[in-house]
Length: 363
Ligand SMILES: *Cc1c(COP(=O)(O)O)cnc(C)c1O
Image (tube, rainbow, N blue to C red; front, side, top):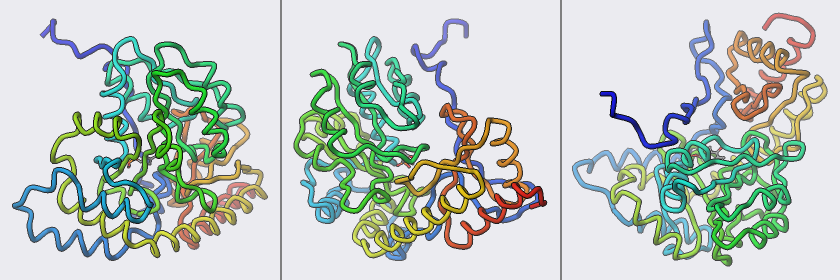
């Protein structure tokens, strides 16, 4: 056994820890730890999934033509330049596998999504964390961190877990300023929660040779359990990613449900409005309890506590009240807690528990 060892980089990977779902003593805790949609998916998506259960003997489509056509129609994009993956996580993996290897650098922001680092290491590349300014991505810092070895630059916009985002002009300045061999990946997992008219980076990915946009069905679409994401970018990049993609990466029920979900934009619009309304309410209520947060463009808020100890104490207090939120020490933010915006009742429970924490009352 002594000679058996994995590729370099693999042992540096710290296992990704998903949001918790257990609160001791609570059979049905309020889970606000994974940015899931409290309203769930479109009923049409659930129906399509059920219907697909009747033909499980058949292999799924290898080219995802139906789903890509639906996405293209809804977003006004060329379906030939869309690729679908098992969550956007899989497309992050494809990008690292195809464009970065030993000796190459993969940039991500200081408080960026952990999967960028994990996928870079899995490909044998070197992840490089770039400092942010007050929890906001800093274009000048990213450009300064680029070297001749930079192959990929990951930017989640809006970002998780900070909830902050860069305006399109700043993102465009980043795209223009990158060295020739670097590809900018705009992760739009929370694009639907952003400001009115925000396109998640579609315009840039549609016009520039060095920009790719990622999107997911896991957040506003309420389909985290389904595992479907997609990417859009230059034809040359999409063609490369399709070479490393497994032919049957998406199951038939997943394809059917995602296609129905994307065609139900009324559901998306309603979830989006509810999220914006309750997010602003929750942020105001918690700020009044000395738990401030940056203006969030996601379906969560990141509250700041005095220090790591206070964050741990509030986390424990929430758990005792049956509310599971996310500690984000692994993202370099030990003094913060990330709280998904639930439904109206869920947000009220968070506010009440936070108030009890401040007044020293139980639960
Ligand atoms: C949740 C999230 C994703 C989505 O991942 P999936 O694999 O599509 O579920 C991607 N990027 C960021 C920043 C996220 O927070």
